[in-house]
Length: 278
Image (cartoon, rainbow, N blue to C red; front, side, top):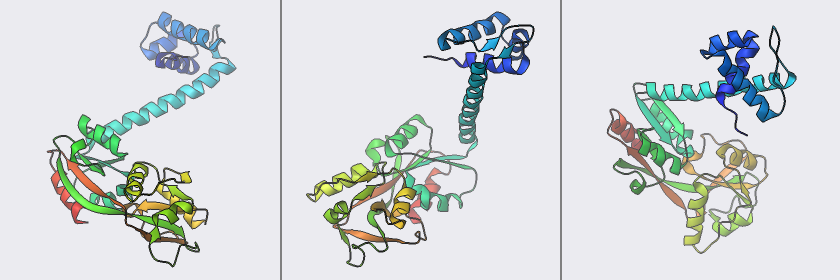
């Protein structure tokens, strides 16, 4: 069922003003247009949303509609606020989740002016960069995905096993790839899963995680609670680590390359150099 924003606005205006005439004046519409909006909504819902009379009041369903309409309006205003923040920023930065834990915040504090930071997966960052939504992208995808951008190599980022402190794999050196999977490993989601799958395949192993949690904090919390083991890129690890968590290298090592892609806007190249130096 399609519900138009104009219909929701009409219900909100009726709730506030108590008449179709005053609601129409508040919305800058004709009375007949507001009446049609409400009638169309009622046909689609199959129930009335307003009691017509000298004073128009909402039915129980109408009050529920108004409550949801206020929430919709609030969300739309929040989205508009994001756009305004981006428009006001001197530099707009997009970054993969792991880079937003420590790397990007540490550098942004050293940059003059207003910097707007948004988190996304690699495919989202490439799309935002192509559309001009961001001026700089911190991504594990290489320059072939970012058109005519200036690309800077930031670092190699190793994947590390994340273990409960009392886990049997702790205390025996690096963790083997097969042993990690057999311990019912949690995949952190995003682009890490495909990268781990490729890394495992290159060494003749299969990446078959027991859990996909799509959140760095959840991987750490699960390990700290002794629920399971995980794997995270080094950049994603907080400093200090949560109590009860141990990280170990993998054997053989697996990793990925982090790049910074910039367009020719003031401040982007300087920020890229700072990111590469951290």
